[in-house]
Amino acid sequence: MSDSQKTPIDGNFYKRADAHIALANGHINEQTPPADATNSLMFASSRFNAWITAMGFKNAEDMKAEKEEVVNFFTTQYKHMLEENFDNYVENFEQFINGAKASQEKK
Image (tube, rainbow, N blue to C red; front, side, top):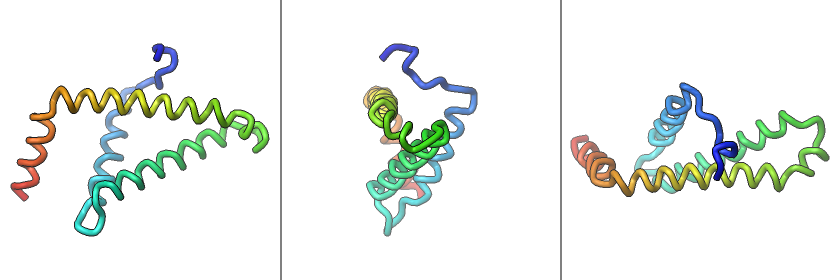
């Protein structure tokens, strides 16, 4: 992906992302497994992205005409971000996962 296709990152990008992650983590418990929390987070993101996109159109017909382009944009962005984070976890697996497991065991 070229740099022009990447979503710009402002100074609060990671702060906002961490807040969403903390909220999702807060929902994980004995009744809500991680898979359920991630499904809710993905649904919320898609719902929010559809709303933000709709706000930029004058009518439903114009929005419908741009569906493929919008869906491609968001799926490309998600794929890029997932690949970056996946690679980061592979490179830092011991630190991220073993540290998290040790932290959970202390609770």
